[in-house]
Length: 290
Image (tube, rainbow, N blue to C red; front, side, top):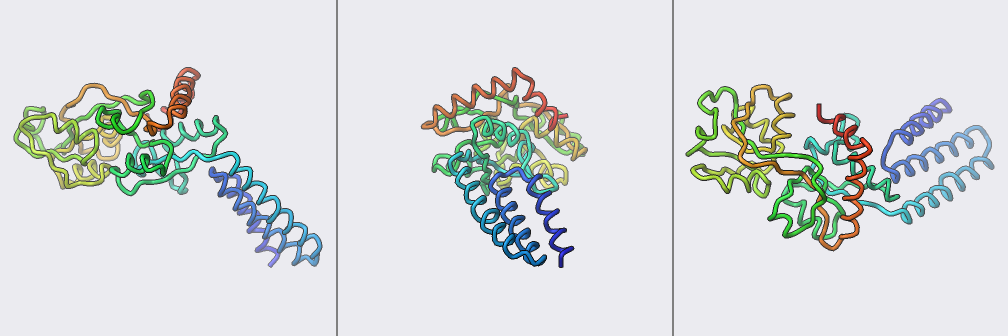
């Protein structure tokens, strides 16, 4: 039994060191202290076990939790499985958006909390409902969106392109797309860009923008509108995809903030300017964009 306790202590200690979320780390440390108490009791030291349980599992954990409550939380609303936010093989949040907002929260002495929207279309309504502080999901700055929320300064360039499978040898330019159906997810920048094109049919049956690259690769759809960064990175995974051409000028991704949170937006813009100047942004960029 002693061996089991010792193994559990090592595992809990390593988990507490590796975990990024402060609240989760404190819970793990509370469990560590509880196992330590059981270990002392097993070693016939009940007085030490009681002290460890009272101070370690009880008093210290409460103090840490009160400190977190006082420190505050910054909630990031996102849509998972994109190139800008995803969970790695260890189940930890990562991605360019997460890393940037994690550093922003740290600078403001806040804990970054992640809330995932079930669909892309929920992001802005969730923000307006007060269920998050910042949208960090590779969201393009659009006039239609700016009527509802405010955006930070652009932090990543983008434009909408049309893609197809390489087996479609008759689709090589935008002229070849006329009269054909083009797929895009509704309420995305790609859908808005398609609405401005003439002589095409817009197909909106795909509700998940992250599935478009796969659908093109497998031949389930013929033409799709996606952001250029997604297309370039996606070609590394789906090597049978080609870009037909772009249908918008240069655009930018921005972080979405409620119009009532002007002070938060101001601090975020200053932070973005600082990390671009000191090289932090470039380091994060190179980490995910090769």
